[in-house]
Structures are given as structure tokens and as C-alpha cells.
Length: 136
Image: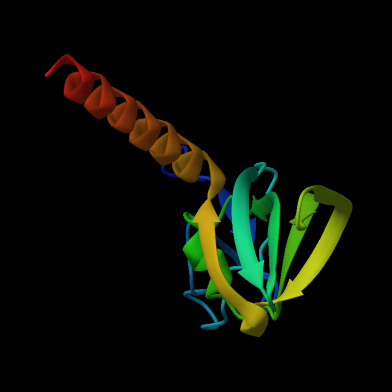
């Protein structure tokens, strides 16, 4: 880069021109650039997901060019890929490992870390309330 900037660039998959990694649309040909693979690594987000009357716990890969899980769920791909997945059964969790779930079958998705922290907050509040009621 001639101007000495440290902006990272990638190659457009359609026209092979150099574009910024953060670009959503190529300024040269107008193609969608969401699926450009960069050297940067994405992250795995632990989620709880309900689809087709089944509840799954697993890790969804969020690519580096996507900011949130919801953005990934609303992209053009038809399936969500989950790793380290378990299916909630009646009294236990069944280990599945890897599963591809059709996005049209998904009823809801929750961030597992948020659900667990809210659960802990609710438990601590109810314990505090019951202790204060016993003192009165």
C-alpha cells in the first residue's frame, strides 16, 4: 500500500481486485464479499438452539468478517454448522459431535454463557429473597 496505512486487504473472489477485509461489497465489481477467507481466525460461540422440536447445545463458528451470531444466522447460507454438540433428551444429554441444521427449522438461539449467567443471577436473587423473608 502506497500511502503507508496498515489496513489489511484481501482479494475479491469475483474480480480478483484488492479490497479492504472489512468491505461488504466490492467497490470494483459490486459482488458480495462476506465469504472471503482471511488469515484472521474466527471464534466459536457456545449456544443453545431449538430446531424441529429438539434442543441442541454446541459451538457455532463465527467467521472473522461477521460481527454477531445473528448476522451469521441471517446470511445467505442455508445451514448452521455446530461442533461439540449435544442434544437435550428427557433425563440426559446425547453427544452428537457435529451437526448441520437447516436455518428454516430454527425456532430460537440463545448465547449459552448469557443463559447461564442469568440463571445464576436469578438463583442468587431468590436465595437472597428467601433469606430476608425468613429473618422477618
